[in-house]
Length: 155
Image 1 (cartoon, rainbow, N blue to C red):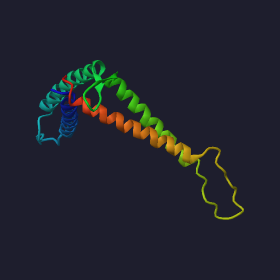
Image 2 (spheres, rainbow, N blue to C red):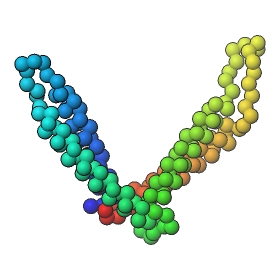
Image 3 (cartoon, rainbow, N blue to C red):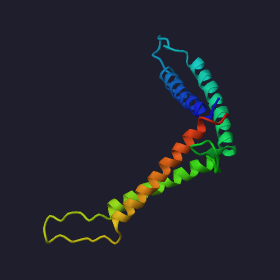
């Protein structure tokens, strides 16, 4: 199984766990004299089994991510692991988001009358937006490399 397939399976397991939990929760209490639509004990057992599978799969994914090098378009290894690339991408996305927010906050609002206080920006919001756009592009390119590698590396 490739990392990408493992990630798809992981998402499926997370969905199953969520569904088992909700179904069990909905069958914990019944009106006196009634019977639950589903056996909550069986649902809880299924929840526990799915959770065990999720933990094992997640550990395999993390291990593969920490040991595998990212690859370029030609399949050549780069000097960064998948795990490092994921951390870098997360940092880029976070910083880009914060810079966009600062750029928006630095944009003066229109005044409705001359008696209102006039605010002026202390930073150039266009520069911040340009930096945010550049970081976002770098994060997208990194994500493409991560996805490419995920389809090549075995768990």
